Image (cartoon, rainbow, N blue to C red; front, side, top):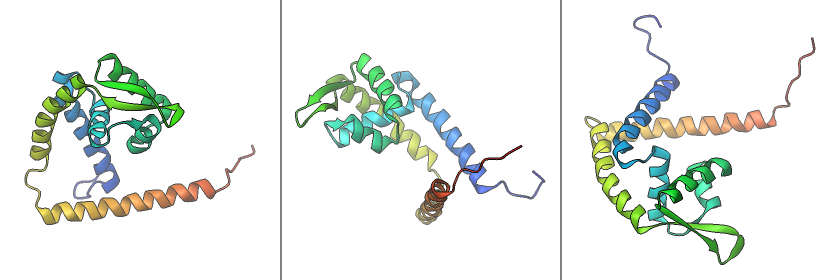
Length: 157
């Protein structure tokens, strides 16, 4: 990129997201948690007894990835799965006591990380960033919808 030309916004967001994720993983490493596992534990404190389907929708994880994550959390005795009395095919996922304790310990450190990450950002700056990201998210949704409607072109050689 030539000097003086700013990086494309999408590229900056992509690299920033990678940097945040890598740093968050380092912050969570002493707790033997990945960022994905941490996010699932956090969701389970907000809604106890979520079904795996609900968790998948809230975390934007496909069923296979979510099952893998939940298996790892269950092996660590951080979550429990129980049959859903309202649906024999579904399981309810909840935090164990050990899971809640680990989440409480790691939340404190993670919140400190988050505060430091936002240092120097004023409320108006944050609101503007949220507006820009919301517009971009809407644009992504529109593009994805267009791609679904477009017929797949085949090239003949």
